[in-house]
Image (cartoon, rainbow, N blue to C red; front, side):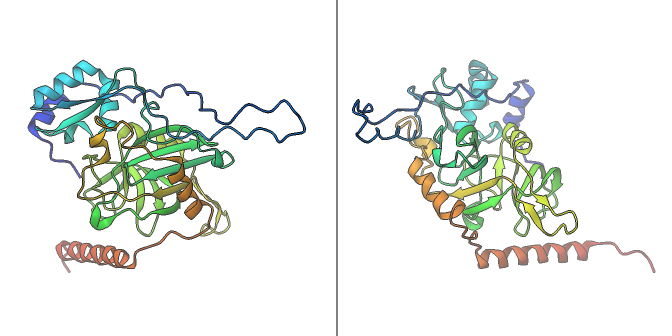
Length: 327
């Protein structure tokens, strides 16, 4: 689907403002807790260091009003391509969805992508997991971990209220650099990473309007979509029987509840820089409920029936408009 761009958004694009991926900052030392080890070797050893929780950047967010297209262009030019993209990520939207009258939360100039991560730098309990992807519907963001360490995070747009992305455990099954949506054949989905073949849930590049707007998929910005496409592992199928999975792809845990109809948490960052934090305890609860429990992902039967009816209606509409050859 080709988005209907606003005229002033096109003017911004024609201004030649190139957007590049924001660089990831270097790691920060984890906080260490607990008293020093006792000198008496007969006593119990000191407790281990407290697990690192979300690290909040010490700087501040400034509210920048967007009065018109010129204000957005001036902001982009003053920040530079990397910092402007970082500001868009914080606001969960792409530049074509910044409207006149909006305001953007702009982080301080010293912040890097990982400085502003809403997720913990480490999840120690997953150090043996290899790769792991977390998706928080509550704060509309994903995080990629390797051996328990945060590798990358980025904004998302998950399912709208009527077609919410189901929480639970998934895996990155297979990939396609470009494919047509099964929901609407006019939509071209790039950097597609499948999570559920029946429901068509996936990661892919598409518009980020600053709120959950998809039909259950997980929309990503272009740089994040390309990176995740290359980083995530696909499943391995049995050579003799392609219906059997020998090894699943990278595990994906989707969790949290977005507060539809209320002010988005990132809109509160100027007043509270921790508004989008995903605490370690919240992650551990999701991992316990899905990754470690073996419990299957809950599927809403009403939602499945709705999707089936929509697909059937589209197929019938396509048949009714098809021109048959002359007998």
